Length: 256
Image 1 (tube, helix red, strand yellow):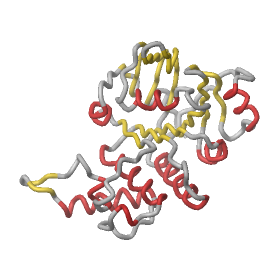
Image 2 (cartoon, one colour):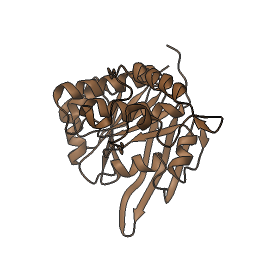
Image 3 (cartoon, one colour):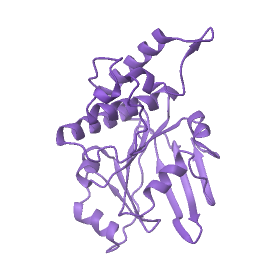
Image 4 (cartoon, one colour):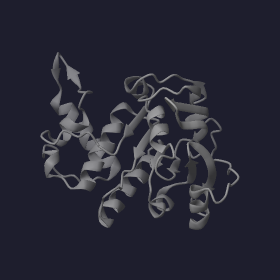
């Protein structure tokens, strides 16, 4: 396996304040292509703040964001999308009354001759769903008719519209059944196979260990440990999350 030393994403000393509250303090994060990096921590650890900085929702007060080695400003989600960064937050923001295709291309419709190219969008939507192994047979079924796992598939498929290099997933398995969770973890593995870097935010250490390559711990907005997801012990991650210990950072490996 060849190694690409340049991370798809590199955050250095990123700080974000909300008035007197420091949500992130000198936070670092590195993600390579074909790598799933899990971001874990207790409530108010700064996970969602970091995710929103990467996806352009928040602008950091200090620090740098680099994409493929180039320092980049992401002042809004549209800019992040243009730079190949896509995100799926817990709310999903799916339009329940619209069908699968309409949700995938919402805001990014394919236009030809001044009109929406429905045939093209149908073909692309089917391609995105097949790449994820989503198992959604009807492209024009209303999203309201889909299971929770299938809705996650639609939301993740929507990230593929911009041919992303990085996808941020905020608690994608929250409130799902065991079977639906397994589906979503499969979608994440497919993203990695597509060559995408993935940031996975989750409270479930078992889900993280099932699919992630590396685990990064945040505590009170600061880095508090980095672990190999396959070999580390559950107790070690919990100790870093609770502040019982501070662990040395593992060397992130590129995936290609």
